[in-house]
Image (cartoon, rainbow, N blue to C red; front, side):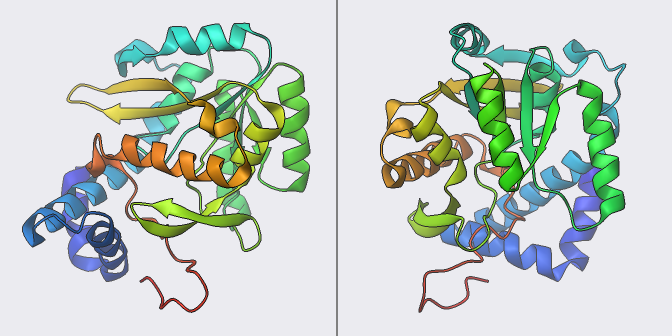
Length: 265
């Protein structure tokens, strides 16, 4: 059904199609025109799948093993949490990030940062359904940052979408697929300041469900701010390259450009 709706979206939504194709053309310039179009269509199908899966994923009665086939790196994550220092988790817009909640909800003191939508009614629905996992939900604002610091000091761990486009003044330009990309500094600031263990996490769709991956970050994430942000983007890029059709290319990731550059889209 998602593939069918993806075809309709491809034909009718000129804006989404334009954004998706522009992102792919700039990030994968070596692909042929046919390959770029094929990847764009698959990416839009995946985006529709993510939305259609929410009802099932938010069902409190859902048996995790019926959805998640394999979990890679879980032992390393568990060992890092056992150090009692707190932990930061970078969960890029890769695969279905809502699936990660099914695994992370097993742990005590799990929290995630979220950016509230413009519609308060939709926000309430999101908070209510995501709240079924008992995770602490922290709004992305100044008060939220303070809550994160307190949570980390209390040996908790926090998941953040690191490729969320920040507001003006809340990011720096760093390479992503060779493109100067306005990137959030919050994640790197937290990593540099707290020195807590850092992992990257994502859930890739398979034929019968999902495979979940937890990858330990290199020490570069704890260096100075500029190098940390650059490393974060390079790590996300390496993850995206594993299954580019499952990345959210429908998102206007490059809408903020360096001064003097023409509009990206």
